[in-house]
Image 1: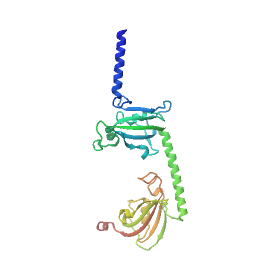
Image 2: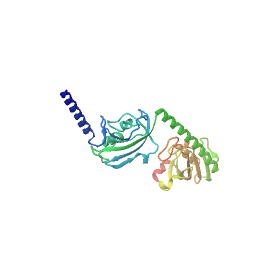
Image 3: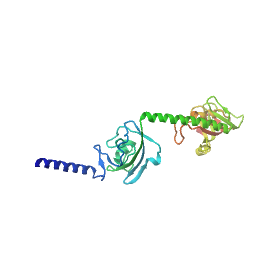
Image 4: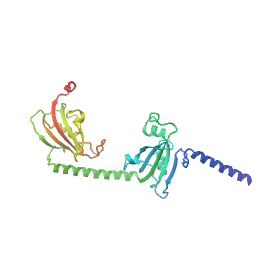
Length: 296
């Protein structure tokens, strides 16, 4: 019996030594077999946990050496991430999978692995050392199944589409713009001339101001050097703008109102939101053959 008690004591002591060895790098943290260090600040064990392919909404900040490295909530609000299989042992996917809705926790993840395998960056180039760890402070706010998430996206897109179409026709009515083409491009000419009309493949020299329906300007030809040269009818610019320029004569000024279908469509483009209707105020300065541009 004494021998058995001794063996049990040795086993318990060994286990304690093992646990201490696993957590001494980051005191107060536990460690998974894959090498993820974790500490829960609030644990809602009765709440659902995410499953593979679910979409997660989180609040998250990333620290390196206790200095803020990246603030997810500060740069990407209302963004969901899909839970996937781990990319490397002890990565963020494993961290997400451990959480319940409403949980908040801290995780230490190998920084060089994040740089290489998440962002395809050389850790040395971005100043990370082999023993650096990122500390992630995460709160899991919401979980949606892939089916729920896709359905919600479709509902949101439909709402955006109908709102865009309503705003488009309200703008036309408020600005008394009634002329339109078969494609749905609306226009109004403020200056009409009998000048030369550009042909497909020719270059049109224009001045322009581009704005949203609310009047916010997002681009103009002055930013490009006083004017802008466009090859007409070759799809080098937005479809609606290309069509509009082809309708003008040298010396004319016109306003073209592009529905989103003739602009960037149903997807965002840089800082331009999805389903954006756009307004282009254009002046056609000159028309010339393409080969001449190399000499100007």
